[in-house]
Image (cartoon, rainbow, N blue to C red; front, side, top):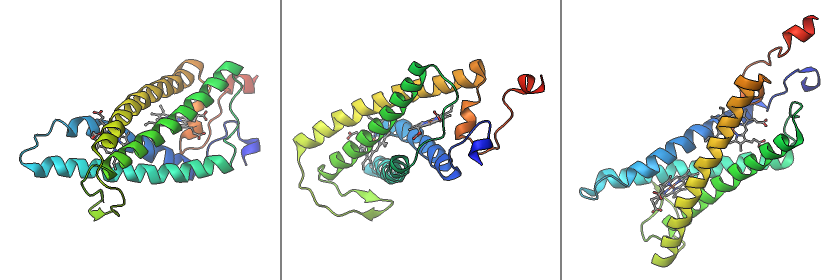
Length: 192
Ligand code: HEM
Ligand code: HEM
């Protein structure tokens, strides 16, 4: 039970979602920058990389919808005792991570939908509902690029903060998002 657990955790399904999205988003960022360096001629390898990026990006969008639905209907496990500013900062960074991920995925999809090329999801062509629009495509590309940089910055703060808690404060924050049993965090004070 969470009430008797010294380090309450997120439910396993949320932990699996968190790490699946973290791995996919990291891959998307690398792939997103790298794929644009692939020569346009011959067209195949570049198109394949773009299609893979779009398919993984749309998968992340779907997983994010599931995750947001869980988050909107559940309370996260209670934080360990923290100064108020740190608790507020953690919530603000989490909110920014959600915001930039949605902005990134939605701008990527909308830009692709109006690009004049079919958007394929792992080979399956999605409904072509929008006419080509070069101006809107360009605007979406700018939003996509900026939100990607903003996401990288938010992830950087998030990871540094987690490492600080884990290896400087030793408050076991990482175990809240890790599929293992909670550990006894204060063996000395318990033994005393
Ligand atoms: C692409 C990379 C990542 C993204 C997008 C991401 C996103 C998020 C989000 C949105 C939350 C808030 C969960 C909620 O309450 O709804 C969260 C929590 C958490 N993440 Fe990440 N994360 C990433 C990578 C990492 C990494 C690399 C670590 C470990 C070093 C990590 C450790 C944690 C921990 C410990 C929590 C729980 C924090 C708490 O309970 O206050 N995350 N993450
Ligand atoms: C959270 C999900 C996503 C992340 C983190 C992400 C990340 C990135 C990054 C870092 C770039 C390079 C940006 C630049 O050079 O300015 C990029 C480019 C691109 N992404 Fe994504 N992406 C995501 C979702 C999507 C989706 C869902 C699509 C389309 C269905 C998409 C389509 C594109 C395209 C077409 C480019 C090439 C540049 C452009 O035309 O704007 N992305 N992405």
